[in-house]
Image: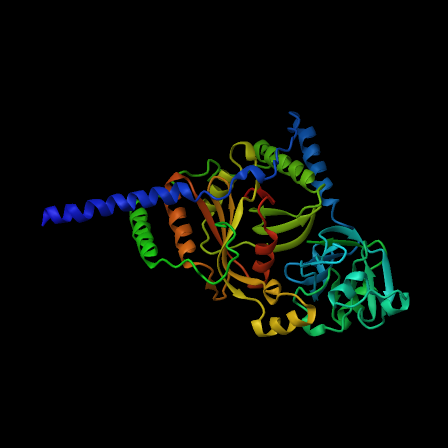
Length: 214
Length: 237
């Protein structure tokens, strides 16, 4: 009986131990070589308490100063929302549609487009009422249509809704005829809002309003 | 692949290995691997001007001011105000209160102590995320129609509503987020391997804090928190 126990138990215990060691040391995740080096040089506080307090207060103020004094827009591409904020408070929040992140390659010319909403900090640089969309080349290539020679054939008066807010590089926050798709990442990079929300946002933002996209 | 289980469908199903894993979990649990180390600061009253605390805050502020110059979003764990924040150029673009699944101030102090230990001084890089379970955000039937309209593969438009996921930093630091939705495991086998690995690492110094979060908010954190993201931890009060 004891011998049987040893015959079965010993290999089982060894097997378990080997499995445990393999687990512990084999799945260490990817190498950290590609990770950014965050070795930021920092200064120490002065020895004098009064000076140290002043230095600490200054650093706190410097950080606080980064928050815009005026209302600013935050576009959350992960959850597809747009909000207008002032300091820590939210003035309005709306469901949006942002870029798919997909890409299109024109087999004829080799040109490539990535349909993502750009991340970073931008400024409102235009405000348009009843905007017309000037279809870029990709809009025709995507539909397997010929790129028109006549400029007028590129214009679409419906697609952007009643208002558009430009935030640089041809990207806009605008209305949409596809309101049922709000909440899903379906756009070519622009940010779509429902009719009521784009009207509200249009009225509240000014040229120069900061736009934070993440 | 292990840290980014994008492939859905749970193809890796090995019941025998999973059962074996469970045995190891039980063995490891019975060994009792809880770290006994406690924060050196615990129990000490914070005086009006505490030079050590001030120095630590000053260093964190300088590091944050440096991070704020970049165009990348960074994560802030503010243990004092019990708040998780995503910031871009110093501006909070997303925040959520830290709701601990099991409030344990010693564990929070231990997490902070280990996070800020050594050269890190409270600033580390996110080494990866792991999604245990998720539910589809949009029904497939809706995405099929949308996909045809916008000419995109419907699966590209799908977003996982995370039910449970983890953020990882070096030295076994783990922040786990749990939501109240019922999600499907992405891979039962990989989940079992991850759980076993973490139990085995505990005696060598792994610290996990678990937070509860609204699913919509968890979606933002899960998608925004990518490998390489800078993370700052401000100390508990």
